[in-house]
Image 1 (spheres, rainbow, N blue to C red):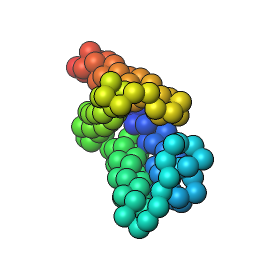
Image 2: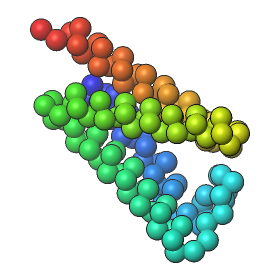
Image 3: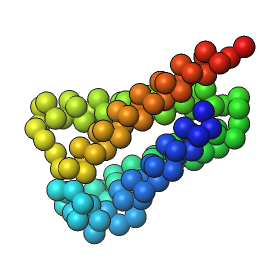
Image 4: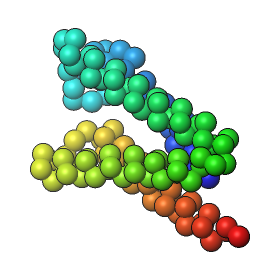
Length: 126
């Protein structure tokens, strides 16, 4: 569980930073998004902090055995809910950029890997 939690925490940090460090400069380079105005900047920076907070929780939980199972469950919900939202958008809105396709694959793999970690931990428990 520790390795999984550290992996998801580490992988989410660059994504979080790409959303919020300088959204008006970075997002148009990597995605088909133009960020204009304080409201959009605030939304992306709030999203960055949400992702960073989740990463911090998973990193802390990696070293607190009592928290690990709940943290893995939260990571699974986090990843698969993002993937589900992207799948809805794919059906309703059509294809997005390649980077968002990669995020979808990572979210599905991350969620399924978390489920596998939980299943393994359940089998290994005394």
